[in-house]
Image (tube, rainbow, N blue to C red):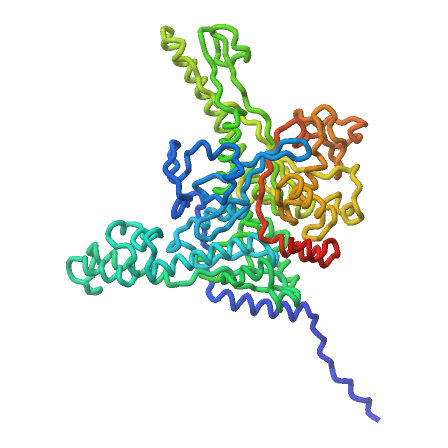
Length: 614
């Protein structure tokens, strides 16, 4: 008999990941309706004091920046109020924590015009927030977790721009920006409160000569009318915020909460990707870069702006620069690091010995005292950029002092009869301000990778092997002698980000009830838990060895020399970040999320319902 026929071939089942991948590609195609290049913005060219700064032109020429010296001192209790940035600095509060004074830079009280973004994110999105609505990109694209603070801040900025465009189209209040003031070159030609269509018609009537397009009308009114019509068409386009994240849990998709609910209510377009597609687009190769992934198509052709996770890109530079300037000015006003004089009399090179007891000898008054500025870090972008800007200010001072000294020597050689008082120099002391990053997402190695990648993407260093390492801020690490639980021992003493922990709750309650500092549970409590480990460190005794093969030393110049007590051969010594120094803590905000964070602690059984309500 003939052989039996072969069994029918069964189609191999496709893995769930492949199905999810196809669905994700369809979602990407639907979002990317048009293709084209990404828009680039010169963030340093944005007018930070546009619209609602509330300040006057200061002595240093910064239009809109407050020049009230009292705002750069320690704030009183009754002055700890929300502050409108960027024209006014965030207040600084002086508190005592475990018998040690600490300056708290209250960025949680900072508010941006219109969007009302606060805290650390107000620094990161400052430049984006200050772009005029008519010039604002059609689409802002980012990615990250579904409860990200950065996600919510971007959604708030885009929503504020749409509200601004709506006001401009349908009439504005007297204290708001009017239509005529938003188009360059139209100043004085268009009355306030006029819609774009009315403005275009009025400007067309003002033109001389024929209006027929075929005749090539180039009259002033016709050109302005055409520009107004183009601006009107651009204005009517709704600004979009597209945000990529991993597939949401079923409960969160059914009932959005927290930052996700707020961002969706502000008009955010959420695109969910499978873990594999998400990693392919935003994995380690692209995740730390300020440039968009090559496989991601801009949703709006030529007018989509890419903001990476956590805002770690050039858009955060202007805000970090303002923060650095505020800290430097505050520290100078505290009589630490103020301007000092060098009397360059006959036979003096302008550099005195500091005793000031002889004529013609240099006199140095109150040089800079050491200050450590401690800041919690996720992507650590703010910490790195703040360190970068403080270093820039210090370098500018060194160059300015050197130039003054060279000028003095040249003038003394040219005119020996010049009065001694004319030789008196006003020099700025070299700053001793150290930025200290406290990792709250991952460990110190992760923080270092993030900051190194950001430095490379901004051109501060080269990623090629053998290139010199970029200058990075100090990183605070857990101490090896502390009694950690199993999970924290696996993480080298660091907390797992977002995971409720009794130690974090204890720190939160101590800071709130005993020291009057209200912090969040995602960044503030982990940062203070780690900071308090080092609170009693002294310059004489040091604090012992840390994790990952490194050793803290007394606050002297870093050295590669090691001793047996320091941990033996191969372990690197470095200055202790806060021992023997004044401390400033930058309060990064995030207080609006405490309610949802407390709910998670209640689910874990760490607190009861009454504590959540209180």
